[in-house]
Structures are given as C-alpha cells and as structure tokens.
Amino acid sequence: MPYQPFQQTQTQILAYYVALMATFLGLSIPIFTQLVVLQVDRRIRADMQEEIEAFEEALEVEVNTGGKVSLREAFDDFLYHKIPGDKTFLITVIEGEFYRSSPLSLPETISPDSDWMERLSQTQEAITGNHKISDPEVGDIFYRAEPIDVIEKNAGVLIVANIPKGERQEVLVAVYTVTLVLLLMLIPALFVAWIASGRVLSPIRVLAQTAKSISEANLTERIAQQGGGEIADLTIAFNQMMDRLEIAFNSQRQLINDVSHELRTPIAIIQGHLESLHYYEPEEQPEVIQLVLDELCRMTRLVEDLLLLAKAEHQDFLILEEVEVTDLTEVIYLKARALENRNWILDSRGIGMINVDVQKVTQAVMNLVQNAVQHTTEKDTIAIGSSIDHSHKQSKLMLWVRDTGVGICIQDQERIFQRFVQGSNTQNCEKGMGLGLSIVAAIAESHRGSVELKSQFGRGSTFTLVLPVDVPKSCGG
Image: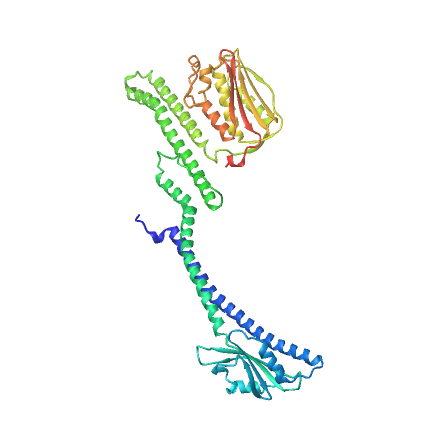
C-alpha cells in the first residue's frame, strides 16, 4: 500500500491537536480581550468615583472644623493639589456655569459649551454614564457628575470625565502581543506533540511490523511491554494471541509430522499384504486379514493418541469437576486389577475434594498402570495410591503407580516422556507406540501439574502424578 501521510494516525492526531488549539485560541482570545476591557472600564469608573469622594471628604472636613469655606475656594484647592490621571478630566461648575478644569485645556469633545456638558452642569442628582462620540479616535467618554451640597444645596457640580480609548488600546496591544507569543509557542508545541504522538504510537507500529513479519515458519516474534495503559493492554493481548497461534501451529506441525512418520509403516504393511493376498492359500487368507485388521486397530489407536496430544494444548481440553480423592483412587484401582494377573496393592487413599478432569486423570493413571504391566511379570507387585500434600502454599494431589519391575536406566529417565521414545529395556516387553507417557505428561501439564519419576534399574519404578487440588478455571472449557 502506498504511503498516505494524511491517513496516518500520527498525522490525524496532530491535525486534531491543531484544530483544538485553533478553536481554543479563536474562542479564548476574544473572550479574554472582552473581559480585560471590562476590567479596565470598571477600574476607570472606580477611579472617577474616588475622585469625587476625595473632594467631598476634604470639603466636609473643612466645614466640620468650623472654618468658613466657599465652594470656589474648595474647587481651587482641590484642582491645585489633585493631578488627574491620563485622559482624565476634572471639571467644576458653580451655579450652572463652568468654573475651572484640570487640566486647563479640555479637548473639543468635552467642551463646556457642548450640549451634553451643559446638561451635566445643570444636574441636581448624581449621574454616571458614557457619551458616545462619532470620532473613532475618541470613542466613548465615561463621565460622573456629582452635585455638591455640603456648603449650599445645588451650589455646584463636580464632573469627572475620562476617555478610555488609550487604555483600551494598550489592552489590545497587550492581547495582540500575547496572541503572537502563543502562536509562536504553538510551533514548538506542535513539534513536541508530533514527537510525543510518535512515541505513544511506536508500540502500535512495532505491532504492525511484527504482524507483517509473522509467517508459519516464524511465530516466535513478541513485542516488549512498556509502561501501562491501553497500549500495554494491546501489547499483552497481541503477545497472548501469538502464544496461542504458536501453540496451535506447533501442535498442527507436530501432529502432521507424527502422523506421516508413524503411519508410514502400518500403511506399508497393510498395502503389502493386500497386494499379495491373492498369492496366499485360502486357508492362509484369514490370518493375513487378521494381521491387516490388527494394523488398522493400531493405526486407529495411534491417531486417537496423537489427536489427544494435539488437543492437550487447547484451553478447552479439560472438563473440570469436583470428586472425592478416595472414590477416584478406588475406581482406578478396580480398573487396573482387571488388566493382568499381578500382585495388586492399594497403598493408600487420600481424603478430600479435588477439582480436576476425572476422565483425563483416570486415563493418565491407567496409562501409567499399562506401562507398569508391560514391564513386570506375574510375580511382580504393582501398587496404586493417593494422598494430598498440604505442605505447599497450594495443596497438591499425589497419585502414584509403583511397580517392582525391570526399572528404567538413568539415561532413559530424562527422555522417557518424549513422543515415540521407549526405554532401552523394553526389548523383552510388549511393543508399544511410545505415546503413553507423553499423554500422561500432557494431561498433567494441562492441569498445571507434573509427573515425577523415581526408578532404579532392576528394582522397579514409581510414577507420581502431581496436580493442584483446585485446578485454575482457565485450564478448563
């Protein structure tokens, strides 16, 4: 597939990030600007109110001290000592007529002769508002007109006016600067976001590359887990899937190899006898047919055993159920005694409930019994027993088969559980297929258990099936 950058997840994440940042800036900057302007306007109005309150407080102090103060003198003293802020104008009115202002020079828009200023000069109550000017260079004019009644009612008016255009412009410049800085910072932020998204997505890229490199001949590739979160969960799930695939493919490959190897001989025997059947005398043909049937039965058992070994690696191989150890041991012992004439002994019977696949455990122990029968004579002893070992953190079920047969030499003990491997001391025994102990080991492993072997050549062997008393539910179907 050709490289399509705009369909890459990393590119899409960056695009979403850019869209999010653009939306954030597009909404937040106008709101921020409006809030700051409102804050500036609120501060200007508060300053105007403070100017008037400062004059009234000073005038009340003079009056309360008993001094004779005229409004004209009070205005003169106030304007002399008070320096208004930038674009702030203090205007005094006595008996409806303009008296003085600070600064002395007033802009044309605040001329005492203007209609709105004359209206403020005649006011008999406090007025606060803003006067809109058509000149865009001026904009609004905030004003506060307060009648002065301390000395004489309606003797004069103090007007405070402010042109907020300048301070608002400063705010806009500051916002513009902040916006420019944010936009400049957005470039390295996008770069960092690109790098970060690449690092976050790197396990997914590795997963994709690993999936592409996987073939039937290479199922061992795994992804190293890093950190936690969803990516780690995905990595774990992928590795677990690969484990199952590897087991399934190996099981399938092993089954095919085993079948092709082990069926070659009986098929050749059957084919040879059938092709030469017409050469035999009529009285010899039943014997040949019986030989062919025996080989077919052997093939059937072989295929069933191989299928059992293949299924043993599947999670649904076991059907778990609770059973009393004593009952299970006695049932196995009764089945074993019916096989051959031996000195059968029931060593002991464990007491307690266990959670296992009864059918599979019985099959495993019977395979051990069959193996003991093949390597003993009528004079030998075969003992079966069970117990529960509570010395471990998790209690263990011990099921054993003990015999006094020929035993197993040390070099064979390490490989006796491999498929199609038979001990070197089996030449005088009944010929088997070498799968019985492999099946025992597979059943034990499927229960999260094991098989232990203690043997002394010439003195006999003891096979012990060691299983957890409570097999994990994940082992069952």
